[in-house]
Length: 123
Image (tube, rainbow, N blue to C red; front, side, top):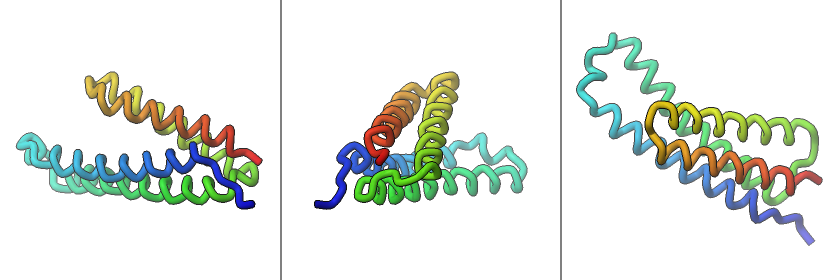
């Protein structure tokens, strides 16, 4: 019987939703008039970095889907999963400090889901 980890599958879905939400939030935020006061290169870097983040979440979703099927098979997988948790938690703290509590809670929950799913997915 094939290996299955429902928590990592849920984490994959969560990262897919994060990717879509992150993109949507960027589209909304980049309409703010204050961004027009930034130098063109800085605005371009902000936009590129924002969309890189959206693609990052999609990639992590795909990776978690793979892990949901195979488990975390070696130290590299475990290290990547740990770093994803730390990154999401750190970003959540940053959003919390800036007053964006919904994003903070969402990222913190995904960090916890990632950590627990990875812990249970270690072969």
